[in-house]
Image (cartoon, rainbow, N blue to C red; front, side, top):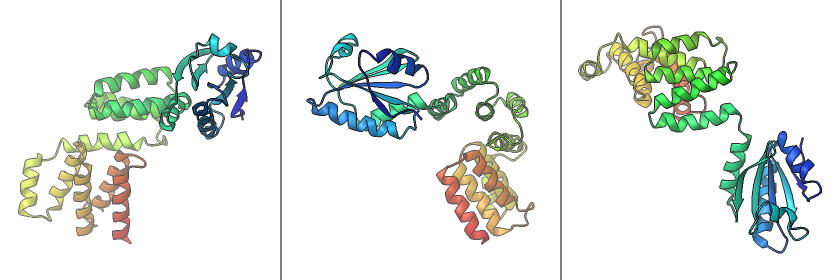
Length: 282
């Protein structure tokens, strides 16, 4: 594992910063004991880099000992941070930075391509811009054709965009045992199933007339899932589960499980309803 921090001087700059940065991003901190904010910055950054398990390292340049590097890299005040990757300065921060800013910087430097694109995608998808999301994922798949995680995300976004044939094609290319493959698969099946169901207005009428019309409840649950009204979908599925487990061979429970998969790992709503389902069954 890389040392978390090391001393940088003009004599070792080439080997310790430039050459080392070919393998791992180097944070180069300019500091001095005589400047308290720079001492605080050193302590904070040393603590943070230690948590990244060698994925990013910290070079310390004491300006009180030698100002050559500071002058060469146009450091005007302390603390100052330069980020070196692949032998080039890719970021420079002057003045004190809070821990959140520093952690965001290190996250960006250490994320895998899949992690980085997933973070960007969340914002794009939340805005409903599926065209951009599809373009991003198409590029990612082209660049890393063996990355099944990208293909899973690609299929999922294609379903949400309504490009069902393309989604089926992508899904067919993903091995059955791929993690989270069931997310786009279930989303697609919900859409396909809903196409043959009554519209929401008619289902509402039926349920108003008979709250235990389980077929109407089931169809409404699927329609809610298609429109991302997942809590409403889960409530209908939970109602079926409580009312008649034999209905459609335990379709209430099975529908809840399918919705959990669409919501994805770690989703708090899925966790809450999973507990409710478990408590009812046991």
